[in-house]
Image (tube, rainbow, N blue to C red; front, side, top):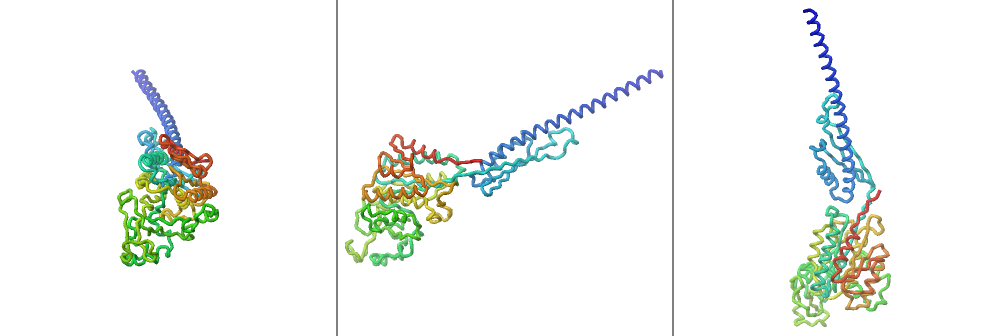
Length: 467
């Protein structure tokens, strides 16, 4: 009986030893597997954060809300349920051309390990990426011939092509601050829109010959709201060659051409005033607006030869299509296209002059006070200035003077570093070919116009990121 009891006790003692050893072994294995799992998860998460840091860095190159975009990008790609990563955050630091992004998150280690002694709480993961991002901003001006020859199918095809142009150029809408596009509708006169700041005080004063009429109409100056043109916020200026009495092409000197770039305070810009009795080709403009006439009572019926008492008329040459300056997104550009109507005769030379003024730093802050940095300086490595010159015909009015003026303007613009892309639509113009930068002259037909404008947009739609 004693021997049997001793055996039972010994057996129970032996079983107890085996159970403790197994528990220690199992605990060790669980700790090891928990450690391996933690390493794998943290390594995978760190790798993913590293890739996201690079993506965030690229995103920050041209976003107006870089920090917001970065955090949205993180949350869209990090799922707590699949990564065990909580509270992902991103921080961007931009200075002196160097952009640094830091992404952080917490791995829920307590949910991965089975041994609380291995680790407690959350494990923070941090990844940093830095790069010098060289973003090329673009200032683009489209000088578009909107003369009467563009009416009908040519205008429709041009607008459709420019919509394709916008689809490509703004393919990534987030990149809306890297490009600004302006449209200069060129016809007999260029309607610059409501720009009273372009004029000095004496340029808005009532001329002597219009004072009797101004008194009758209650006009204080040429900016009064019922003055022809002003009532529709249109402003067309005298052609500078007419104002300077340059009636022959040999009178247009390089110095005179260069003077056209000077800012408005250094110019003597004057309103074009229609005081001659010219029966307009229609009673309304192309958008349905009426043409107004004001004749002084002392000179009725009107005799324009009475130089001391003039009438004032709306000018059909000063059309309804006005300059659209510094559009920075797709919707603005498409809305700008809706303002274009074909009217009167071709005057690409005047259109090129105003396109230059939209690109020249001499006119900085004059076009849009909310974009006072535009136009930027010449010669910046991070900025490119481009004029797209689009026409379907040659000058028919005063062609020798206008052709020479256009070619000389283009030459000076190219000397300043402005690239000129010329699109000759159903036309073959020597002056257009002379204007174009090397390799940038395109002939387009009704069949190819959309492809040509798509090609131009693809060429322009490049943002350069290096290092």
